[in-house]
Amino acid sequence: MGLTGIQILGMLPKKNCKECGFPTCLAFAMKVAAGQADIAACPYVSEEAKEKISEASAPPIRTIKLGSGDHTLAVGGETVLFRHEKRFEHPTAIGLLLRTDMAEDEISERLAKFKKLRWERVGVKLEPEVIAIEDVGGDAQKMADLVKKVREEVPEAVLVLMSEKKDVLAAGAQECGEHKALLYGVTLENLKDMAELAKETGFPLGVKADSLGEAARISEELIKAGIKDIVLDTGPRGLRELYEDQVIMRRAAIKKRFKPFGFPSITFPFRFTENLVTEYMIASVLVAKYAGMIVLSDFRADLLYPLMVERMNIFTDPQRPLVVEEGIYPLNGPDENSPVCITCNFALTYFIVSGEIEGSRVPTWLLIKDTEGLSVLTAWAAGKFGADTIAEFVKKCGIADKVKHRKLIIPGYLAGIKGELEEELPDWEIVIGPREASGLPPFLKEWKAA
Ligand code: B12
Image 1 (tube, protein in one colour):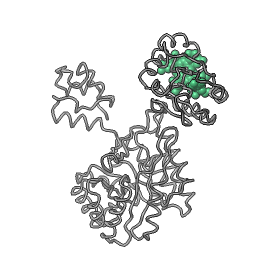
Image 2 (cartoon, protein in one colour):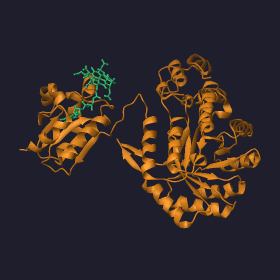
Image 3 (cartoon, protein in one colour):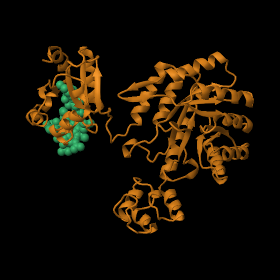
Image 4 (cartoon, helix red, strand yellow):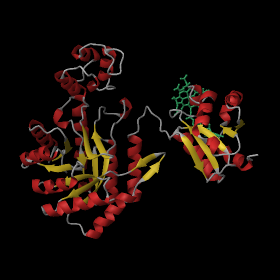
C-alpha cells in the first residue's frame, strides 16, 4: 500500500529548506504521497528512506521502458481498474509480426506498411510502435540479420525478439545496441539462462507461460533472481481465458498488490483465429481490457485505423480536453489581404471552425489562442478568453507581420467584448463573426480587406 503524507514526513529530515521546490517538508510529503512529486527531489533524505518511499509510491503495475532516446516506449504504469477513477497511463502498444523465415519481399512489404500506416486525428498522432521478430528454426544469425535490417529501415520501431533460445535472443539483442528490446520467451525450462541474458543486456524479459498460474510462477522466480523489468503472456488457451487473464492480473496487481502480476501484459490475438477481421476484433477487446502490448499478424489500413482510434479514445485523460497547439494556422493559402479569425484551442472547436473555413475555400488566417482546452464561452467564463488575454496573444503571435489590414474576426458569442478588445488593441478593428461556425463560409466570402 502507498504511504500517507504524514508517514513520508516522518522519514524526511524536516529542514524546510525549500530546495525541493515546495515551501515546507509537509507540503512536499503530501505531494509525494499523491504521486505528484518525486522523493528524489529532496537532497537530504537518506538512501534507505528514498528506497522505501519509492517502493511504496511505485505504481502497482510497473512501467517498462523499451527503445531509446526519442523512440522510447513506456508500457504499464497503470494505477486504476477504470479510466474514470483517474486515467490510464500508457496506451496499449501495437505491433506487427515478422518471422525469420519470411521471404525478403514479404519483409520489405511489411516494413513499408509499418512506415505508411499512420494517421493524425484531432491533432493526435496514431502510430504503431512495435515490430515483433519471431525466431523460426533457432538460427541466431538469421535473427541478428533481421534485427539489423529492421533497425536500419525503421529505427523508430521498438522491438520484441521472440525465441525460447538464449543464443538467438542474445544475437538479436546485440544488434539492438542501446535500443532496448523486449526479450520474449522465458519459460520454466530456460528461466535461468534468460535471467542471465537480461542481466547482461539490461533488457526486459517477456514471460511465455501456458496458464495464469504458470505466468505467476515464472514471474515470481524472475523476481527472486533479481529481474525487475518483466512483461507477461499467460499463453494461448482460449479467447475467454485470454480476456479473463487480463482482468484477473490487473485486479490482483491493483487491489491485492500481488507482485508477480504487477507487470504489463503482451498478447498475440492471431493465436486464437486465422481470420484477420476476427483477430482485430479480439485486439479491440484487449485494448479496452487491459493488454500492455498487442502483436498483430498483419497490418491492414481499414482494420488498424479503427483500432488506433479506439486506443486513442480509451487512453485520453478524461480530466483533460483534447487540445491543439496555440499559433497561427494558414488555411487555404492566405496572403497579406486575407481575413484573420480567432478561436480557442479546444480541439472540438478548432476542427469545427477550421473545417468550415477549409470548406469555404477562402484563404484565411486562423489564430488559435491557448485556452487550456476550453470552448469559446467556457473559456470566456473562466477568464481565459477575455479581451485582455486575446489582445496579449494577438500582439505577440506575429499576425501583424503577415497581413496589411488590421481587422480581427471574433466568434459571434464573444460580441460583448468588442468594445473592450478595441481598447486593448487600438490598431485593430474588431469584427463580430457569426455565432456558429457554419455561418463562416458565407461570411468569409463576403469579407473585404479594405
Ligand atoms: Co461551461 N459554460 N462552464 N463547461 N459549458 C457554458 C459555456 C455556458 C454557456 C452554459 C450556460 O450557462 N448557458 C456558460 C457560459 C455562460 C456565458 O458566459 N455566457 C458556462 C459556464 C458559466 C461555465 C463555468 C464558469 C461554470 C462554473 O464553474 N461556474 C465553468 C468554467 C470552466 C472553468 O472555470 N474552468 C464551466 C465549465 C464547463 C465544463 C464542464 C468544464 C465543460 C468544458 C468543456 C470544454 O470547454 N472543453 C463545459 C461545457 C461543456 C459547457 C457547454 C455545455 C458546452 C461548451 C462546448 O463544448 N461547446 C456550454 C453550453 C453551450 O454552449 N451550450 C457551457 C462546443 C464548442 C465547439 O463550441 O467553442 O463555442 P464553441 O465553438 C462554436 C462557436 O463559438 C463557433 O463555432 C463553434 C461551433 O459552432 N466559433 C466561432 C468558435 N470559434 C469561432 C471563431 C470565429 C471567428 C467564429 C465566427 C465562430
